[in-house]
Figure 1 (cartoon, rainbow, N blue to C red):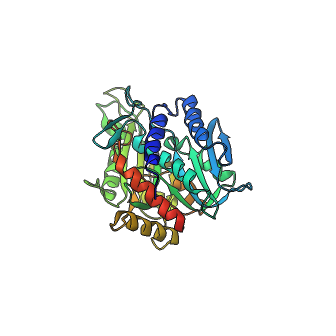
Figure 2: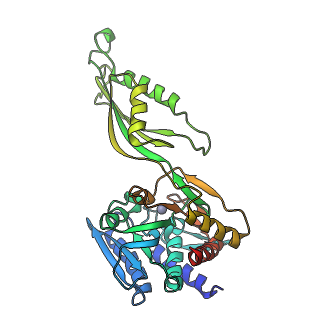
Length: 363
Ligand SMILES: [Zn+2]
């Protein structure tokens, strides 16, 4: 039986976290959100603090002995993307809580804080609550840093948004590429004397657009965003001899290397490819015992069939899966993360709490 007051307290904590502008540009805000949570849990559990390049994160555990190995890690980020004036004033309307961070992901974090308070002393296995402040800028000094320091989980649940109470057990991979085309400069009235780098680049992009067609709806396919094209040419009457394109590719299978190879093979030899960033897609099998236990808890609480899904974007989970710690995204219901009118469904917080509680008691 849940204490009905607990949901009032969860909403109150969510709002206290939301008024803090915890963006990457405001390091004080990052400290402040963590201080609010530390204050909630102080004296009850050991809290380990981490800092990397000035970015703070914490790890709260239920064990008295110092360990960095847990059966389950509950993970949430308390940083947000920037917002407009007014976005940092939470508003409740028609069962929804509006404001920056409501959905992504301070409400889910607040649920996890109260869940930890409620349950971490009851369960017999080591469990940790991991709170970081740099997910929106890559997670390299939060989750990734804690992993470098030896933090591991047999199973990780990230309360990331986008899941809407579905179990997100796979995520697409990502590659950022820069294509370079080179040509020969000439006066534009005498085209035959030169070779236009922008035209070469344009042809290469047409090949790639055919390889990765633009989907009109959410589909589990590889996609390519042409983010930027540039050349050093600044005038009309000049044949450009250099051009570059910036591509963001989200892919469903293989590795970074196989993806780059596929693109290389599709393009003419005189287009150079520079790889700026990349990581492979990840999948945890639906047969994983923790996924099965979570599925059972969802069905027991909602009386509906649990749904599994994939994420088109990557989250901090990728840092865990890259060291062999399986995990899923499982979060609350809402919409418009990173946009105007971000909101979270307040009722879903109750379901979320009850599902996770049921799950943790059987995990
Ligand atoms: Zn998020």
